[in-house]
Length: 392
Ligand SMILES: *Cc1c(COP(=O)(O)O)cnc(C)c1O
Image (cartoon, rainbow, N blue to C red; front, side):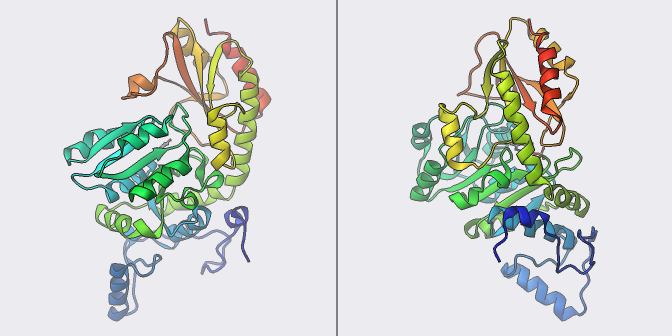
């Protein structure tokens, strides 16, 4: 019987020895074998990469992490999903697995800031060249491809500024030119969009965000197709990434309610945007919501839903008054990360934070990123209404 993703998320591990609904947390470095012959067989199988679920040492996982991998494989439609200690190490694992000296990476402007640093600063030292393209222009991407391009790396929508790309076109281009593709899919998660099904080789998620859902765990996932499996397996094997079974347990627990939370984040965010779009002090909303916009159409083409992360642009001569808006919010915490049950707000200057050749803020424009949580949207709207009065 083919189960829906919702059923998979709710499904307990029936084949599990513990007989509890949820898998036990198995903490292990040493994995015991009955005989020397059995141990040797496992080693050989792992070396041949025959069975994706084999492990002979705690760094490769335990029964707990394997349960999470199974759940994510179903959700992503992946050949295998590698688990990493943070979302960013999932980004690093993906890029480092595929790129070698002399290669070029073509990467969309607007990716997560540490991803920019990894490519621009670290990989440069290893003679891997990073070429940035305008996420609003497919032609620009096309013009940046050379014989040396090994990987097209996409984040969609872009962190903070929410550019939407025509992902199908990116995939066709890459396939024609035999270039690998990876996408950071943290914003939508595999619940709203399944990159591997569209043709991406790698789909990355920071499990710290919506998968865990409670702002108390860090983790990352790298879902791969068969084509890149061996390369990612090998780099993972020699770099030593491992997600702890305790964190894997909490991520599994978070996934049980992923569908309910994502649907609610989406619903709340729609209501907040309907309020914000009528506020004079809110100059622009960066989110695929305007049905006539290119962003909306591209989002609709590939995604079955939208999450709770949105940016607003406020026009004001006084940056301090925008700070006061943020400081006076009572239901929005001030801080980084997102994807938990709670609302957050943070003033962000994307240009100050890093190189953004294709994004510009005009004079007196300020960007505030909001994460819309699971609180009562009426309360959130009242909070925003009250605090927007501080913008001068
Ligand atoms: C947060 C985030 C990451 C990194 O995840 P961590 O778990 O914080 O390391 C990567 N990409 C995107 C888009 C993110 O928002």
